[in-house]
Length: 246
Image (cartoon, rainbow, N blue to C red; front, side, top):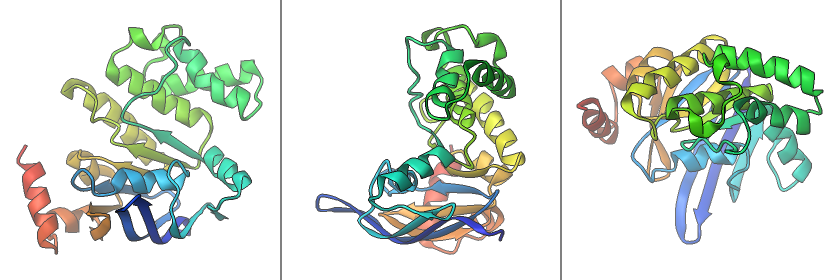
């Protein structure tokens, strides 16, 4: 593996009495594509949200690109600049155009000139296949187009790592492929990606490794060939048999 860009060691997280993460250990190399899958409530989304401190872990260590996530606000700000995130819901600003949504972060956080931000934004909209939508508002776009804008917006900050939290689960079936195609392209370009998803075709095609979460723990991990063809754990076998039937 290339040198790790994300290191998680014995990560625990509680919500009140509920033990959501139970000692997660994971190292992610630069340029690796990791798919995290498992039943709902298994801690998948909670775990990737700890990586950019949207959720705070209470025990263990998380190091992102050499910076440890602690209570130091400067560290959190530094990590958030390096980590892009795409959610289930697109979270676009409805009163801003597509172009304004994509340029907002670079202008405000990276302090770019508007002209530079717009030039980069148009390149990214081209990359996600919707440059002609630049002057429209989110409400005028399909769900798949909105999610592609959300990906372009995250990429505009020039992150080293992209986190995806079930990015296609709110989409109609015919729109899922257009978003997954963008993500495949991103993976092929060498972006480090952590993807929480049930899209097993995507996992099979682009994941370097897969991690099966259940009840806040990693039950099994390995390359897709092993996970799909020779899963070791009964819980993994059962879960895969349920989702691969559909």
